[in-house]
Image 1 (cartoon, rainbow, N blue to C red):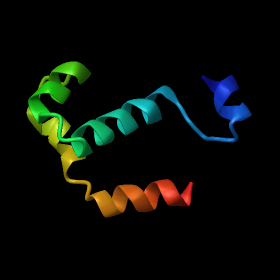
Image 2 (spheres, rainbow, N blue to C red; image 1 turned 180 degrees about the vertical axis):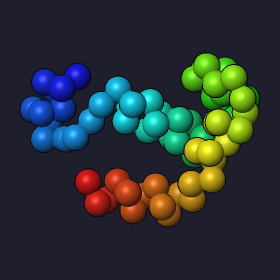
Image 3 (cartoon, helix red, strand yellow; image 1 turned 60 degrees about the vertical axis):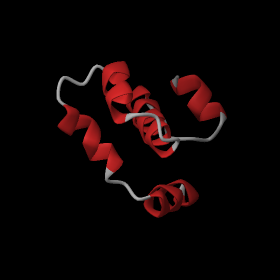
Image 4 (tube, rainbow, N blue to C red; image 1 turned 90 degrees about the vertical axis):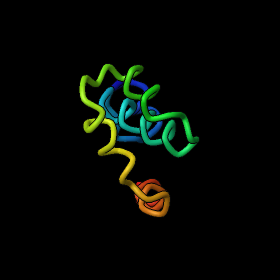
Length: 65
């Protein structure tokens, strides 16, 4: 992971990929319960943290990178 991130001139980690996947899944309207199960979150509240991100905030975060 580190090798390919460095090649692509990105700062990335397995946690970054996991976070990105969750946000994109929710933005793509995948049911939150399905995302929760896929991620192995025991509490729905853990997954809901990601659903509070507005699409504008997500886009701004990516544009800054």
